[in-house]
Each structure stands twice: as structure tokens, then as C-alpha cells.
Length: 570
Image 1 (tube, rainbow, N blue to C red):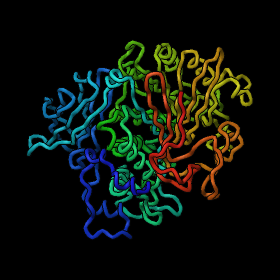
Image 2 (cartoon, one colour):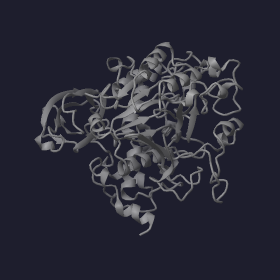
Image 3 (cartoon, rainbow, N blue to C red):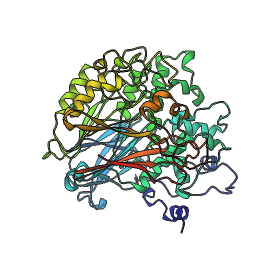
Image 4 (cartoon, rainbow, N blue to C red):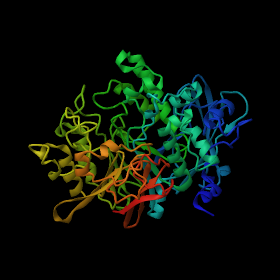
């Protein structure tokens, strides 16, 4: 049996509890666009949630080692009776008990109290329109709790960064014509349509001549979700930014929305913030019911200090993507926070994960002009110093990009602002760019992190996987790891830049240039996701192929989705 046959015959058993049974459209013709066939004839059966009752799947989140919540978003205008049924022993859902709620035309947060001091939480959500008809039920959900790490000392973390699905907006020569596919693209449910196709054929790739082949960033995200469901069993997932598109107004017109340059009212901004956060929930609906998903703020997520939609973006993020806030040791806006996974100060074993926000506290009205202008802000920086004093074996920080970077824009030709590009962490990194590198906040943060024993800082923004060992005095060391991207195309023009080559190295072989064997490379482009595996005394970091995006990458075509591209031991 060859590798591709193996992928087909092994199937995706993990998906069967998350998605409804697949069905081929009547009269399906192979030469027709399969996603258009699904959307027009399946009446919504590709959704991983009951779309007649809900806007998206439920989302579970651990706010502390002993506190969790379940967020439910009823269909607009609908009042629902809800029963949350939890297993008492973590094994049999039928041995559980239920708690009733009523939700009306908005979202509701259901607290999960008790029953968390076991390795796994099992639950299902039962629902009906208020006072009407028989009860329906979601599939049984099984969630690894923080207690799983306390019991085993092992855990898995998935990092997904910069999915950039808003890049699927219409562009010259790439306009999606089908109204049905345009609607699914804007709502986010096109991710679930692609996911449904991957259930039939794990090697499915959209036809580039069809409408569905013009939305490849969405397909690559769907392939990423597919790989996580099929190959992984993570305790939690971090999204390292640039997923929502609220801060990507330059793509709105191509998605069928108003052009920001034509003038937007406060109501427009509120409507769009709600739309994009509901879109986010739909895109990740196959994951959120049974894997806690946490967010890092990116520069395209609408909450940068200079974003017009900042206020409504925060409002709807907190409504639809609750995270640990002030009561759990983070900020009131839930944009930076700690996760003590397994219990705070639990015999020095509980890993500490620090989620930072490098977007919200910079000058209002414009992007930072110099590396020295980037900041966490005084309150977040003071909080970080306090958190870094926590002593444990594993201590990681996550943010979207470094608090500095080389003094250029989105590409190296732009010199009027600093985009936070590059793996620049130390005083020496900034000597060529600043009169006094000590005024760059990243230099200060790196010293604090290294002196506190932080093992690694993970970031996104640059759409590649690149690990760097950062050496300090007295033999201290930590890692700075750019965590890749699942998107469709690597940025070849970035890879050819002088500063890029100076700091990231060479890209080896980009396959649109040549079909020759790839020489050695210093980094790997899309499409990929990062997996962290913690075990006693060892942390392993792997970059794995998320989607087959040949030839728009420097990843060899011999590597198929799920394969390990590169790995390191911390």
C-alpha cells in the first residue's frame, strides 16, 4: 500500500463525532465544483453544528485550573432551552446529571463548576426551542482538563498563526462568482465545507479553475483543522494572531463589504466587528467544543491602538471568545493573561503560559515609526515582571511579533514605519538600527525573560517556522520561535530581502522557481502548524505540514499533510 492509499484507507475517525454523516449530492458530477454542489444541495449538512438552532458550535474554555465555561450562541431571534449533561466519572455520559438554562437571541456563558479534577471532562449539550418539541443533542464531547497534566506530566499544545483567511477576498483574476460561495466565504462556513470534502478524500485539493479554488487560504485552514482532528490530541490550542480580519479593512471590499475609504459609521464598525467574530467562531467550530482555543492579538485583528474598530472588536471578542481576565490574573479586557496549566504553584510542576498583547498599547492613530516605539504599555509590562517570577520547569510566552524588529514596513522598501518584522531579540540585534538599543523594549523584555528562566517565546507574523537559540550571560539560553502559518502561499519577495537573509537566512528552494532538489534552508514557509509536546524533562517542538500547497512554498513536495517538516528539543 503506498502512502497516498494509506491516507485514504485510514480515514478520519476523529471527525465522526464532530461532523454529521457525509452525503453526496444527488446527480453529483465530478467535473462540477464540489463545494458549490454541497452548498446548493445538502441544506447545511456540512456544518459541524446544528445551524437551525445555533450560529456556531459551542466553545469550551478553561479560565483557571478549577474553572471552565461553555459559550453557546443561539440562532439570531431564537430562544432556546438548554441542558448541559456532564459525566460524573469522566467515562460514561449516561451516568451524568444536567443543568438547565435558557438563552435568548444572543450568547450565554454556562459555568462548568466541579468535575474538573479528573483527566477528562465528558459532556453533551441538549437543546430545543423554548417550550417546544422534543430535545435534541450535540455529539458527546470529551475534553482533556488541566488535571490530565497533573496526573501524567505530559501535554500537547498546537499553535496556529496567521491563517489569513481574509486574503481569500476577490482580487483581479480571482473573483468568486457564485453568490452561495461568496456568502459562505463571508460567514466563515466555507472552512466547514472544505472540511467536509476532506472527510471523503484526505488528498482533496480544490480545482484551481473553479470558484472553490479561489479561496485557498480557507482550504489550507480547513486542512489544518483536519490534521489536528486526525493526528493530534491537544490539551489546548493557541492562535497567534491575524485570524479575524477586523483590522484588515483593505480586504473588506473584496469580501463584499463597504470600502473603509468610503467612510464608515460607528454602526458599520459595530456590525463588522460582530460579523468577523461570528465568522471566527464558525471557522473553528470543529475544534472549539472539545479543545480550549486561546487567542493572541495580531496586527490584523482590529485591536491595535490605531484601529478604528478597536472598541467594538474588544466587545465582541469578549462576548464570543471569553478568555481569562482580571479575576484570573489577567487584564480586564482579557487581551493578556496567564494560564497556570494544572494548578498554580502545584509542586513547581504546572507550566505557565503567558499570553501577551503587543498591539493595544502603541500610539493611537498610526503604526509605530521606529523599533523603539513598540511597547506592551506600563501596566502589562509590570504584570509580566510579576508573572515571570513564577518558578516552574516550563515557562513560555506567546505574542504576535517582537516588540521592535527591523525598521522597515511590510516589505523592506517601506521605511516610514516599523512593522515588527524579524527575530530581533537582543542588544546586538539592534546595534545597526538604533542609537541606543536599550531603548528598544524587546531588549529589556529579553533580559527579563532570560533572567527569569523563560524557556521560549513563540510568535507569528512572519509566516515561517524558524527557531533561534538566544544566548545570554552565565550560560543562560532561551528560544525565540517563529511558529509558521497554514496559509496558501509563502512570501517569496520577503525571502529575497537583504534584511530577511541577514536575520532569517536563505529559503533554499521555492518550488515555483525550480523543480530541482531543494538545498538546505534556514526556515520553512507555509503551510504548517506547530506542535509542542511537554514531557518530564523534555519539550519537543515540531513544525508539521498543514496543507499540500506545492509549488507556493519551500517545503518539499514529498512531505504530505501531517508530516514533520522540522523539529527541535528545547
